[in-house]
Amino acid sequence: MKVVIQRVTNAKVVIDDADTSQIGKGMLVLLGVGGDDTTEDVEWLVKKIAALRIFDDENGVMNRSVTDVDGEIMVVSQFTLMASTKKGNRPSWIHAAPHELAIPMYETFCEQMGRAIQKPVATGRFGANMQVSLTNDGPVTIIIDTKNKV
View (spheres, rainbow, N blue to C red):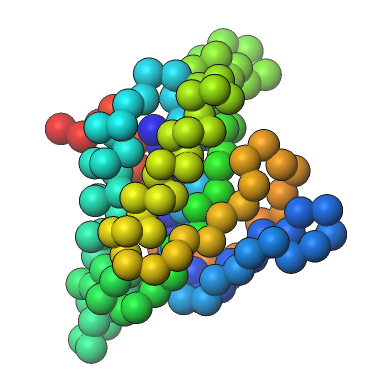
């Protein structure tokens, strides 16, 4: 699994010209699921993100997690994070999980993230053409790949 995490002051997903979900202060998590990802990857990544200290403390030091600041999380599926660009100029998504694996992994990730932060997680809609808008706070953007755990 690969994620791009953006610390945001707000984020919103629009599908078919309708606001679908939105959050205030927190994290926008773009999630890519690979064909070889497992539930262990989900569990590790959820714990890592929930505890990630990227919010400022009273001294302006990134020392607080999303739960410490009572922040929100939005998770948006993003299969293009699994792009391979080694050959040529057209990305290949051969490493992206097929729908029958990716959808349950995405749903499990969202459910576990909600339990980890003890509040509902905002989402996009898997496979939909979404317009995602956000205000990146900082800017702070973190990339995590579960293949690089060690």
